[in-house]
Amino acid sequence: MKRKIAIAADHAGYEYKEIVKNYLSEQFEVQDFGTFSTNSVDYPDFVHPAATSVENGENELGILICGSGNGVQITANKHQKIRCALCWMPEIATLARQHNDANMISMPARFISKELAIEIVDKFLSTDFEGGRHQNRVDKIAVC
Image (cartoon, rainbow, N blue to C red; front, side, top):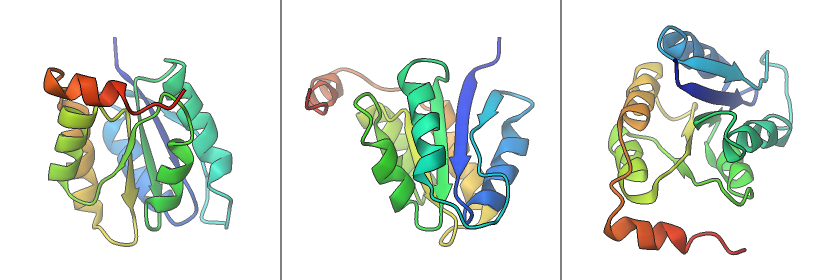
């Protein structure tokens, strides 16, 4: 059974979203929450449904892409059970999974290459949470 991954982007991240989605489609079941073109959109309209799908277990992990990576990350992290890390290099994605049990990542399409985006996604999806001393910290993240 294929792992389920949510993906979403705004207009600035659309091209990267399509590349990542196509790259992952053979190995994973990818649910695309949009956007579906380069027309200007409001990223929360796509991020909230993607984050909800990870939060409720419909998708195991999520990938978000916008120009800076910040807007989509901030939006996703408004969800109580989401831990979305802004990743601009593979090592950040690895540490976000190992130490923070990140269940979503955001990437800045305007600041990384398409090849680097794939490397970041690979690290995110192939790294496990270490637990141990990190679990206590992760347990303290949620406010309610």
